[in-house]
Length: 492
Image (spheres, rainbow, N blue to C red):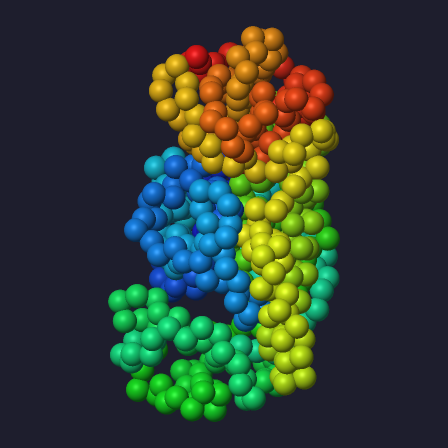
């Protein structure tokens, strides 16, 4: 093998996956067809669960300072994201290019090789691995790996070459956008009138994102991005504002095509992010969904390559993330119905405004969009935390202060003993090469009446006491058969 894993695509999903694999001790090469990193803002929002994920790897502070706000929307109807519980309420305003720069720096520190200007042309897999045919700056070459993961976006070459089924619906409409400078427009949240829908979002440093939509715009099969003159003309027809004097930095178009692969894995080839699912970008969920795909997959693929994964562990990637992706496709389609149709949906929007004023409805929607509602089937029940993400909780140990977030920085499993239970620690010690054992005291709150929790490397609770049965079966399911390698963190 030339490397253990080839990741195709150096966007947020591919870079996050590469970092997770490197933390798991796996050699990885990232290929990207672009010769230079993306320099456009593209996605702008980072939701609570993604902030938690980055914090659990010690990465969130690298994105500071950043603007965190409480305003959000569902179908251009306002929601209060500041109501979220946890350490990261609201949404972080974070242009995608800044996120990518941070992740690229991180993976290089971990020893990951990023090959820019290297484009996947074809691949073939067999029982032992995958052979990728790559076009690089110096010509074509073969790259051999045990696994290959396509993180190469909605037009994924990996998906097409392997023949993944990608059912769904084609675009029915088209939105335009432009990032511009040289004009002062101020913030204009989503506004509808009889002609269409528009928003203006300040990106900082005098840059604004213009998002005009004219009702009834048909989808277009473009071979090149729209011109700024098109965007300015639509914006004028919808708003009456002349932005023709602005200087465009980036112009693009997007639609509401909705598709998802039927399987996230075919043999030794897997898909993550937009390569596995495309949807209308309502609520800014795409980048977040892809990063969370990567964190779910990374430790499982690393376990498979390290030889300790339990049978079927890698297949839980599809089992867990496919329904999450389908949920996002569902809510973005629903948002489209109330967002880009004309006056006929105004009665529906009026009723939804009333519902959104009910705190429980607001909370349900923001938890769904922020991905903090996810509960995986981890094979046990009996405790409210099982299958859910671990909240950020400050902890006291014999060595001082830590937190549930800090414990996950190495991307390993954690047995958190909150009741000083020597028997539990003795059981987990047989997996100490894969699971860190920590005895701590937690204040009353999220872990009240919880004696112990077993955390997966992705921050989800695989087992909890009391109520979820024996610890050993959960350890075997998620961390393989017990081994002799032992590592225990100091405990008090």
